[in-house]
Amino acid sequence: MSKFTSFTYQHDQLFAESASLIEIAKEFGTPCYVYSRAALMAAYQEFHRAFAGRDHLICYAVKANSNLAILNILARLGSGFDIVSGGELQRVLKAGGDPQKIVFSGVGKNQDEMRAALTAGILCFNVESEMELLNLNQLAKEMNTIAPVSLRVNPDVDAKTHPYISTGLKENKFGIPMAEAERIYHTAAHELTHVRITGLDCHIGSQLTEIDPFIEASSKMLALLDRLENQGIHIEHLDLGGGLGIRYHQESPPPIEDYVTALCSRVGQRKQRILIEPGRSLVGNTGLLLTRVEYLKHAPHRNFAIVDAAMNDLMRPALYDAYHEILPVVKKSGGVNTYQVVGPVCETGDFLGHDRQLSLTQDDLLAVMSTGAYGMSMSSNYNTRPRAAEIMVDGHAIHLIRARETIEQLIAPEKILD
Ligand SMILES: Cc1ncc(COP(=O)(O)O)c(C=O)c1O
Ligand SMILES: N[C@@H](CCCC[NH3+])C(=O)O
Image (cartoon, rainbow, N blue to C red; front, top):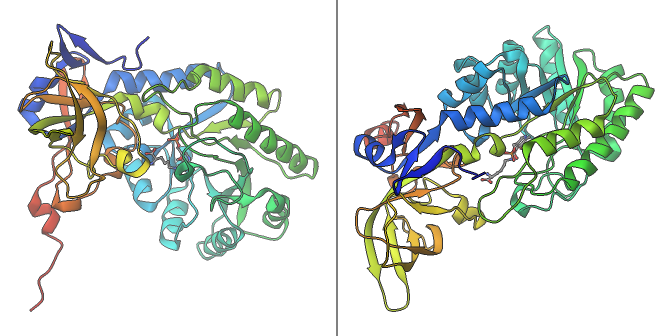
């Protein structure tokens, strides 16, 4: 089965479900992100089904794509959410997410964010340091409440992914070192009056394409969980984080079902509820970035296709040298050249793809694939470029779910001095 179940060619023209990308570009302009509702729902259901009735909660990692429409679709399917800021908390609540299904991760939660989350009544804080735990206990005391906590423990496992997105090695900033975990659990259980232990958590990195690191991390977490239970510290849920990779190019990550089944069988007969925090594997292949060729530059040594999307819209190629497939919206025959597909931003690192074989003329539309995750959510206004529009397709229906920004909106908060 193709990795793009909802983006298919019909008579040499690329469609999102039953909607023509040519029509979308005509109506909403380019660049724009286009998402498929059916693909999103199918990805969530695949995770859900794989648990096969076992007690679980899928907490979608909001950072992957935080558009309210996407959060709302997931909330209506019963999803929980993994947030990392007060801003993400507000988004989830606004989108109709259930506070009792929210876990709050992140190494630097500030007091306002913690207060907001305590007020909302979230499921738990994934606490990443002893100082954060003490701070949270103090805040909860001041608010006359009890903070539910799960410690994020760093299992020191090599996720075998890009070093910028590996989070479970002991040299990474994330989580509490394994060697400290038991002592800090005891502090939380016996000394702190305003926290309540609910769970145990880890997250070892993103875009993992092998199952072994997940198994290694789970095994370490389960050994810790058993030790804690033996010492009378009850753990209600085990959160095994996110990180399952997707196919961008030639990767072959494990299918969702195999990944979930492997986690469940590792947990075995234990009674704890299993939480996971998938981001990319839920939304990554449910979106594309639609862009138009502005100019072609056929130089003797290299050909450039200059398109209207840039690194500010999709920074993954510039940041990680990431590969995204680039497809023509209308397939043509003949006249193929090797192109550097680049944006208008004034940086040599502003590219969407190197050495792509394409048959192009000015004004052609291109689709940059697998951009549903960490595309729009990592976009910026660099070069004073308004952020792209976002479109959700649902069968034939085409919905604008975020209007293109205007220059006026960008400069409105700024002030010229007298
Ligand atoms: C704490 C936490 N949970 C979940 C995720 C989601 O990761 P992914 O999009 O790789 O599934 C991340 C990002 O890596 C994260 O930092
Ligand atoms: N931003 C990264 C993933 C980081 C995940 C955040 N913990 C990407 O685009 O692949």
